[in-house]
Image 1 (tube, rainbow, N blue to C red):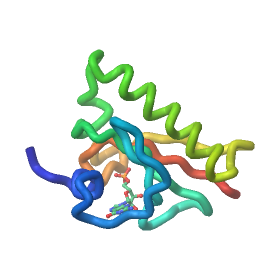
Image 2 (cartoon, helix red, strand yellow):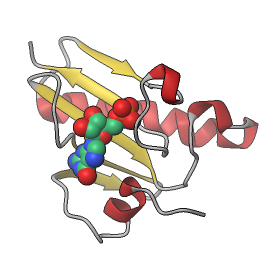
Image 3 (spheres, rainbow, N blue to C red):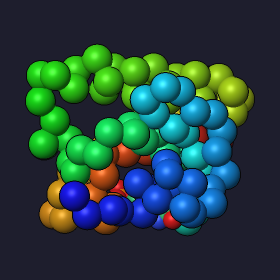
Length: 106
Ligand code: 5GP
């Protein structure tokens, strides 16, 4: 399995501004933010795109969404924010490892 940049962040090979970590996911600041507050919720399991997820990933992906809610609370943007997955090249996905964008703070 090829190691992508998010695997390297999860493994501690690349630094990032981590907000918090849970058993099966990590939340860190986007290095090139496109909103005043822009974080990424990243499952530790390497799933390339949301389109590759299966039924057995249901609970994990549920926890990813709930972690975004926790992050919004901790970041003080729980009055409103956007969550999005880019899926595959044509969907604007650049990093081949599932991640949920959390954007807010406008
Ligand atoms: P995508 O376009 O794949 O949905 O989003 C990838 C996001 O990852 C982009 O918003 C980009 O700024 C961010 N990103 C890419 N490389 C790194 C990195 O090494 N560290 C961090 N913290 N964010 C990164």
